[in-house]
Every structure is written in C-alpha cells, then in structure tokens.
Amino acid sequence: MVKKKNKEFIPALGYDWLTKFYDLTISVTMPEKKFRNKLIDLLNPQDGEQILEFGFGTGQNLIIANDRNRNTSYTGLDIDPKVKYIAEKKFAENEVDIKLDLYGGDVFPYPDRTYDKVFSSLVFHQLDKNTKISCLNEINRVLKPDGELVIGDWGKPKSKLMRFMFYAVQILDGFATTADNVKGLIPDLMLWAGFEDVAEVGHVNTKIGSYCYYQGKKPSTGKV
Image 1: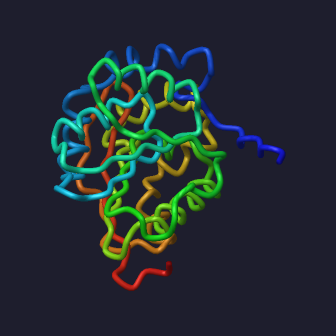
Image 2 (image 1 turned 90 degrees about the horizontal axis):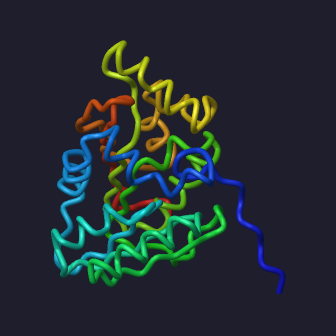
C-alpha cells in the first residue's frame, strides 16, 4: 500500500526551521499562563469525558488540561511530526500519558460521534478557508450530539494597535490564511459547518494581536 502523502501545511511559526523556537516565541509575545488557562477554563474538562485537541502543537495545552482533570481521557491530533516529537518529550518529562496522533490533513482518523468536546488553539489562522471549513466539518463529525467545540485563535483586532501588531503574524503565516481571522469570520465558519449557539466569549490582547475565544455546540440532532 502506498502511503498517502500529507497535505502541505504551514508549520507552527510559518517556517519549518523555526518550529524549535515556538515555545520561546509564545512565552515572549503572549501572556501564556493567562491565555492557556482561560482556554482550559472554557473547555472545563469533566470526569469520564473524551476530549480531542485538534492541533496539539508542542503539547502545552494538553499538559494543563491533564493537570486540571486527570479523570478525563485526552487525545491530540496534528499534522506535523516535528511538534509531535517535542510534545512527546514534554509528556515524558511531566509523566503525562496522552495519545498523540498524526494525520494527512483530510479525514480525522476517528469514528463518528467519538468525542464529548474538541478544542483547538492557534491552528485555524494557518488554514485557508476551504480547509477551515473541512476541518470544522470533521470536528462536527467526530463530536457526539450536544458535543462542544472551543477555539482559541487570532480574531478581529480589538484596536488599531492590535491590528498593526498582527501584521507580524500575517508575514509569517500568510495573509491569505489569516484574512478570515482578521475579519472576525471564525464564528460564521462554525455556523456554516453546522454548529449552533456559536459566540465569541472573550479575548486577550497580546503583543502580536487579539487572541479570541469561540464556543459552539453540535446540535442534539446533528448532521452526523
């Protein structure tokens, strides 16, 4: 069997050779403890839940979530083998046992209605519009009815200064992929993918833009 080659993807900082500096860059440019903990606050992991992080990156969000509730079952999904290596090294150092999966950028490797919740951070601004919608459709598919989606990502800048600072992100990650974020269209894309009760529920201004939080729910009679 010929293994299907992964779709092209934008690495964590726009260029493959910068991936090893990702954690340092986040710690310098963003209030890391604040924005990550608020993300997990919104996720609110409960005993016995099955939770997927789409785009686990270097694993920091999963470490925080696991510390918050060790009676939750977590899984991570990403496309980049380099970040998987970094995350697994962190997990070993922190005695964290969480399954991390790689995929080719198309269909998620999970059955329908597997997860109670899915969350994602700083992933969607790296995807073009069609891929954003495709990934949201896949998230909808693998969520159980009434399952919850929490997204943390760059949103519509909350001031002229935030708009100016966000150009640094766009230079690295591309203007085409980040355009939907700047326009504040993530909630619209969530609605198009079939989510309901969609809302922007908060934001944190950083040195490089406005990091926004979005929530939505798969209907109890979802399309999958």
